[in-house]
Amino acid sequence: MTVYYGATLLTPAGPVADGWVDIDAGVVVDVGGGDPPRAGRNRSGPARALRGWLAPGFVELHMHGGGGHDVTVSPAAMAGAVRFHRGHGTAATLISLMAAPPDALCQQLAWVADLAAAPGSGVLGAHLEGPFLAHSRCGAQNPSHLIAPDLAVVDALVRAGRGHLRAMTVAPELPGALEVIDLLVASGIVAAVGHTDATYDQARAAFERGATLATHLYNAMRPIHHREPGPVVAALEAGAVCEIINDGHHVHPAIVRQVASHPRARMALVTDAIDAAGMPDGTYLLAGQAAEVSAGVARLAPGGALAGSTLTLDAAVGRAVAAGVSLPDAVTAATATPAAALGVGDRCGALRPGAPADLVLLDDDGTRRAVMHGGQWTAEGGEPDARQAQHS
Image 1 (cartoon, rainbow, N blue to C red):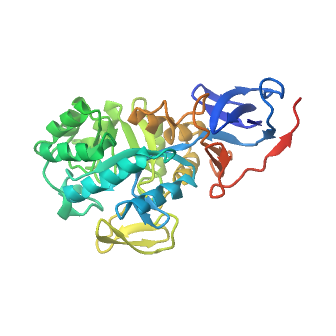
Image 2 (image 1 turned 45 degrees about the vertical axis):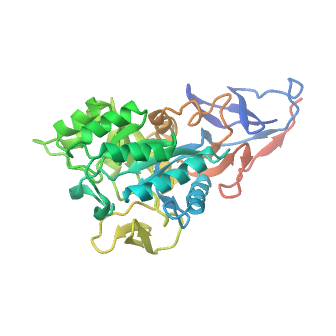
Image 3 (image 1 turned 180 degrees about the vertical axis):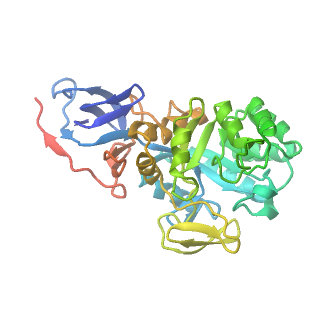
């Protein structure tokens, strides 16, 4: 057992100043405030002082790659991308697959299922970003891979996922899209609205049918107009979980503040990262299309559309704080909110007794100082400057 004390804990009940967390065998045994447990009270391990904010490991809803690994290339590349983001504090990952021919998606879903079944993988399952998306709002999706909504295709994809298909993005204005949403909801799969040119009424119908997630809100969707509010306003009014790519390019800081403070909707910070995350500028492939990365910004070549991001969740949290979001709220947007969106809040996204000891130590401005995975500080995430104390 090891007790860490002195940091402010970000718990489901709120921040706990001068808190302590007792960890044993990779699990959080107990948390509290004030004096840490002493040796002799059924424990004999050391106590170590920390300074900063101690948060649960981040939960990612939307990730395509990182560290030079594209999740669609192979099972090894998929695992490599997850490993890269773990070093930046992401403890649980929903792997996003771009629009592709159904047979290819079925193969990739099988890889996700195998990885998710492996102990300690941290993989929550798969998110299908397509193929039922609007051509007019395809963004960096390959338009040749977009198809009309088809219930038989959905059924094949669900079976290929072996229970690990957790979310799917659909453009609700497409013929048959609402029936797809019905099937997803009935199957326990999160229906997301995105890559859409839907009107307000069309998007609202999707949320009324059970869609609960907005895929990278504002991006690749019809913008707000005072006579046609579109899917953005529909999502906010519906109280959907709204993904935000907070990399300084996809949305303005004012949008981050707006969504974070909305009285109904809940913000979920996501990366939408591609394999170029953590890598040098250059040319990368995304769904068979060339993406040029310059100054850390990925754009399709030619065309110039934003092609995912090179963001990591620790950077997204720091940017949210810089935009004026409180650190506790920024952490919630990267932990409890995405976990709740998938119904896995009992498995991740919270610092509480019984939870995995996957933690992130942050400075006041949200800068990552250290990452713990399974009760051990990781070399990739950095080890904190912790003082060992004697408590007898």
